[in-house]
Length: 605
Image (tube, rainbow, N blue to C red; front, side, top):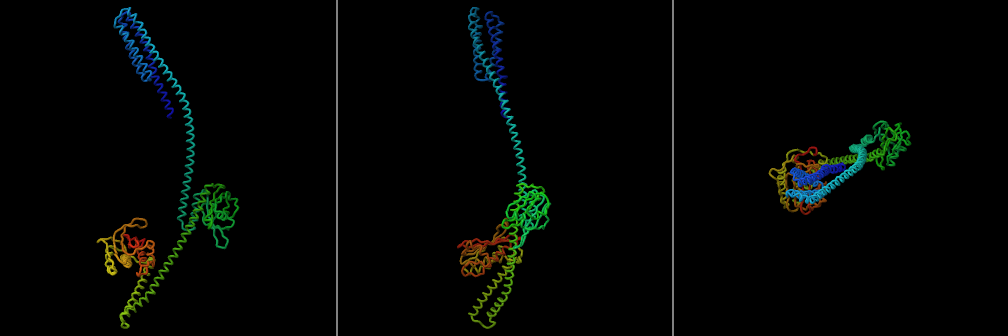
């Protein structure tokens, strides 16, 4: 479009120069030549005869020719610089001729003087005519050049337009071809998008199945939706070790498929063939089958794709997708059907892992329940005789069986302390068993953590002072209040505080109660904390998880205990919807933090 427009514009410009500049200029030059002749005749007539009418005619012609000269000069300036220079030179020459004539007329010379001057006037007049002829020839040459340019541009325009039309036709053909290709690609892309969506839905469907039968049925349904067929079914390999295996139809979809529970021998079947090779097989003509299997029970024409299910180590069966026409399936259908073999292997493996995990969980639950029953029975059966022994020891210390010496009383007191330690250990075991099995009765009430911290500080102040430690409680007058079990929270914090006093040889212990947001299941939640810090020996990073295990004690001198306190406290914190964490550095002390939500979630408890 730009090239023809440019050519048309150039032709228009040339024609405009010819019609608006050159043609008027040439006409004015011709009129100027005739006007000068009239001026020459009139001035000579007046000079020879003195006729005033001739003088008026001369002056009128001079005025008209002067206007023509001005117009010629303007047109020449619009044309080119050379023509403008010639027009100005012509006007100067004609002006000199007129001045000579005006001087001749003004002198009023005698006829003899006029005749003598006519020769000089004639030479000036001839020079003006030559200048006019030269300008006229320049204008004619320019007009001819413009005409030649117009003809050349017209020829070029015709040729270029032909080339452009040809290029446009080629471009239109290319656009048409690209449009057809784009439509084909769009259709292919849409088909692939639909296939990928179907495969994604199939994968999600298989991923949400939790039993072998459910996985098998979903494989059949998804394969029939993804691969263009009229029916699909799955043959699963079944059989006991040491006996001949068989294949049984366990899932069907669509029409023209064998009935459920159709069984036949594995040996010599298509299921055996594909599970051994690990590659799909296309049966182009079902009326001419070479191997056995449930597919022979269909007794119909068509084609089928057979895909192995499971892995090469543990094959589980084969997927059959059947069409109503022979040789209907394409390579893409075979590849898509083959994907279901991989999806099925993953789904069967997932189901196996889930069943194994469930079985292990059931075993673990039975072990925990058995241990809990053992611990409850042990605590009940052992606590009674130990309690009876403590009763007899108390009778001895009271002198019921006679007076005792000071040494005997000291021995009995040490014996009773050992008995009480054993009874405390039994209570801890019983408490741990109840916490593991979830048989703890938890209350739900407002618990002022600041008041609880101050109460525990007063209670353990004497124990800390007795070991030469300072005990500081940092809690506001109106501290955070949580909805929890007061007795269990007090039990947890008391255990943390008791451990801090027990494992801190010197320095100080601090208890802080404050509000702090935390995280639960990856989400921010509102909560409060009770922190117990000490200046003890600290705990190495690799041992910080170990101390929360049952009977997990670190070798720290003569400190007593069975290592159940933190395990019980950790379980109690979890039952309350919270958690216990520790920050510690060897040689710089430890900080145990109990985090509790502001409101306890009954489902998490």
